[in-house]
Image (cartoon, rainbow, N blue to C red; front, top):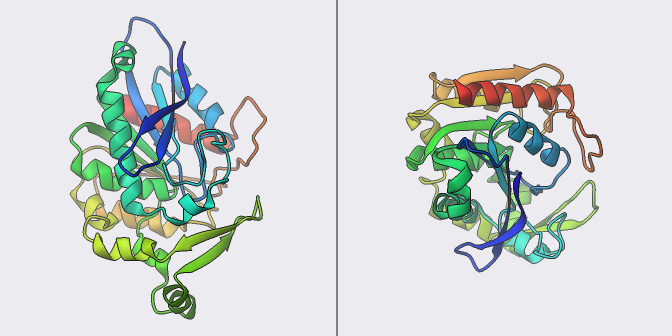
Length: 281
């Protein structure tokens, strides 16, 4: 078994990116799956480590990472000790972080010894689904893209014109409580300003419409965080995509943090099986 845990790479925004790699070490080059976590997420959340093992058992080289400004640190990669970094995160930074990870993967001699770096698929959960859709439109190194309970629009998240938005613009910061940790997590107004500056680049609809690689959309019909309608919109924009709706699945496919089981929920296991079948075919 080849495994790297909390490997530090440098991105382009003065914050380290922590990367995990897990892969069987044998003579056969494995297809690569790079996983992107979502909003208020991290690479070791809940069942993601068990999910990684399931992909490895199926013959994949699985790579996951913390976005540089997700609020974690090198010493504390789980949860959010660095709220200042969290507040200064934005979609452009996350796209750049993913670029840094892909560059690292494709230039790493240890990985190329055991994995087929010309066969890379991206999997993104929640907000990460939007990031991987954008990246896959423009990066010829990506062969498949999977949106896992992914979003269809960044713009709608800002609630422009509301009293909440006006207050955010006036004060320069708004706070969202983390329901699990009870932290008041800051969002600085630069988040919106960066989106406006780069709104064409950050248009998920345009990216989905222009995708020329296989595109899988997986969503639970009980997702109350990202509505099923967003998955259906992605599918409508890219009629060549494949839409899989998992009955009874919430936003995290009936898992939670911490996840102390060695098996997945049946809903997340089904999502994993769908991804494996999709990439292999």
